[in-house]
Image (cartoon, protein in one colour):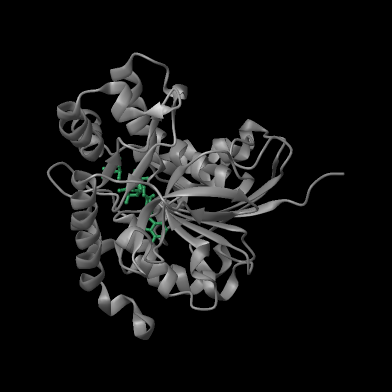
Amino acid sequence: MTKAPIRVAITGAAGQIGYALLPRIASGAMFGPDQPVILQLIEIPVEAAMNALKGVAMELDDCAFPLLQGMVLTSDVNEGFKDVNYALLVGSKPRGPGMERGDLIKENGPIFTGQGRAINDHAARDCRTVVVGNPCNTNALIAMHSAPDLPDNQFSAMTRLDQNRAMAQLATKAGVHSSEVTDAIIWGNHSATQVPDYKNTKIGGKSAQEVIGDMDWLQGEFFTTVQKRGAAIIAARGLSSAMSAANGLVDHVRDLYMGCEGIRSMCVPSDGSYGVTEGLISSFPVHCTGNNNYEIVQGLELDDFLKARIESTVAELAGEKEVVADLLGASA
Ligand code: NAD
Ligand code: LMR
């Protein structure tokens, strides 16, 4: 029997990430090869953006994807989020050279109040919202606070791209394929303070720390390469990452939807685990248990270097929360 379609809203659908993301969703990479989808594509109410969106939809038509059962093109968030099972919040301004992601907070933050409210009022009650638009942890916090009727654990933000970056760096250093790197963990903020965990990440089933055996590299070049990879892509391409960002989002949603073995990194509301201030949306090691559910992995050991850096990245998240306090409403 044919499955009922999943409705997926994508904001900023005519942007760079949208262009790399939509064919992956429509071809089954996100929800599986037998799962039909309806794409609800949201853009800003500006002629150029809506025209670009029409062009993207024409190309999707021209792909004749068997799983694509319909498209909605709109600049009205109430229509765009109507009955959706997934809300992928990509639409927002990317940073340029010399900027930090946090510099976008005042401009991008307000986008997520209206979108959060529309998700609250119009999405399916089990809708999962994933925020990509930067600064994604704090934007997810804003969306979550704007949707008080939905459980907090239905909101997450993306550090899967950072996880994948860490896997690639460790694999290159160890001279193995990236598939040998498992349980790759990013802690904290999707920013230059994020913490790639060399102790609990594994290569060939053993701690990366043990396999690499070079603490100077792990705490130095490895750390800064992963933390600053977004800026390096911008410097090289003149534009922020799009293909790898879309791929990270496909990985994030697929694992959340289907469940998976091992540890993944996701920014989720903190329950106080590992001393991360409760209520912040911070990247944690999670087990995806299937059916769109996850659990924060407990009991991992950290060394003093990692603990100190987790404290710093959490302090940065707390600072971002203060900056957007006016967008969090009475529930903050
Ligand atoms: P882009 O400029 O190419 O596209 C953004 C699109 O969003 C544009 O088409 C724009 O019209 C649209 N948009 C802006 N405001 C909107 C709104 N309120 N509602 C709907 N659409 C809106 O940018 P991009 O390269 O696709 O990047 C999008 C965002 O993703 C940026 O904030 C970027 O920094 C972020 N990003 C995050 C990660 C991550 O790992 N979390 C990775 C890459 C990029
Ligand atoms: C990334 O990590 O590539 C994105 O967050 C874009 C950026 O600004 O670095």
